[in-house]
Structure formats: C-alpha cells, structure tokens
Image (tube, each protein chain N blue to C red):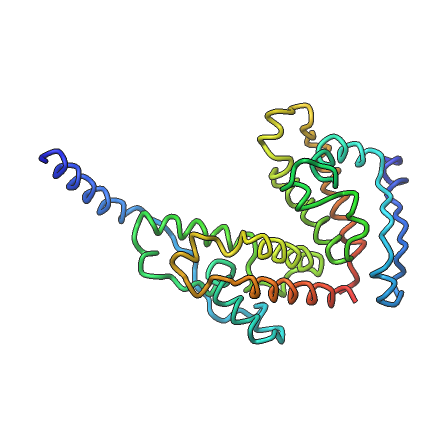
Length: 152
Length: 127
C-alpha cells in the first residue's frame, strides 16, 4: 500500500514536471489567402467535410482542444499536426504547382478510400470528424473531378 | 550523359490540343531510359506490379498499369515516386534489410527522382 502511494506521488510529480518542457504548438492562422476553400467554389458538403475531418491537422486553422495543452498528450498532438501540415496544408493549396495538386488529390483519394485518414486516434476525440462510407466516396469523387478539371 | 539525353526524348500519344475523349482513351507512351529502367527493375517493380504478392505495394502503384491511368493520376504517381525516393521512404527499410543489393545508390536515386519529376512535368498541362 505504501509503495502504491509512493508511486502515485512520483507519477503526479512527473506529470507536473513534464508540463514545463517546452513544446511549441504550430501557429494558428485563420485567414490564408492561398487556402483551398477560400479560393475555390467547393460544394458545401465537401468544404464542411474538409473542415471537420481534415483541417485540424492539414491547415493553419487548427482548433486546439483543452487536452492538447497538457503533456504528454500535447506532445502527440503537436507531432501529428506538424507532420500533417508538412505532408499537406490546405492553407497553402494555391501556392502549389498543378503537378503537386494532382499528386495531393491522388493521395487524398487513396488515403480516404483506404480509411487511413482521418486517423483513428483523431476521430476517437473528434466524433464529428468520422467519415461514413458515403462521405468517403463523395470526397474521393470530388477530388477526382477536381483533379481531372486541372488536366482539361 | 549523351545516352541519358538520347533516351530522355519522350513521345506522347497524347497531343496537346487533343479533345478530352482522346486523352482519356489513349495510354501514354513512356520511353524509359535504360539506366532508369534498370533502377526501376532493381528496386521498385518487384513489389509494384500487378502480379506482386505485396498487396500494399501494388495497391499504391503498379508500373505495368501506370500508362493506362487517368492523366492526373499518372502525374500524381510520378510526383509521388520522386517524393518517396528523395525522402528515403522507398524502397522500404525492411525490404532493404532483407535485400541489401536492391538498394539504389545515391546517384541512382537522383536519376530516378529527376526522371519521375521530368515525366510528371511533361505530362502536366501549362498553368
């Protein structure tokens, strides 16, 4: 019993200490002149899906939930957002070449169809980010028609 | 170098001003330079072909079907090839551990990346 108490105290101390480890959160920018949704007339259901299921990690418009400020969860959140933005950032969409748009639209189709995205760890805490089979199909169809329109 | 340049000449069955239906129905003709083909054979095609047992690999890309894909997809795949090779995501580390002789050299990687990028650019219509 004494050991258990001791361990809990240690754990609490550790959790308190790790809060002081610097962990720079990627900056939030709400107005982005090269943003995908801002620059294109997307069907409303598509822009809603993109915002709800993708934009937290794949844009500069991240909404940080309360637990994203608490270590060690915050480390994971920051890592995922960094990687997400690095891989694809809808806030910078229009600054890409046509070639990169094609690449990213093709990847979106693959990732969404194969159910790799949105990540399960994300949808656990963001129920409205979950995509149904129908949502996935609609997103893939939109990405495909957009990509084809770039090549007409 | 002259060999590379000689083979880099790419013939397209797709004409720039061809109507859309033609673009969709005709396959792109890829003239792959010998040295690039060698790298592809050594390090990529083993998993990325229709007969591959590697489901994940062939799910992402099958070289034998690339030319028949929609044009945007060909460009997307080519641009992605350049990315994953440049960033050492491909060939997978696990694969290279088992088959170290399949690892492309730095020079081969550069050749492959440049080829894929050039192909992607050539197939992309002007902005």
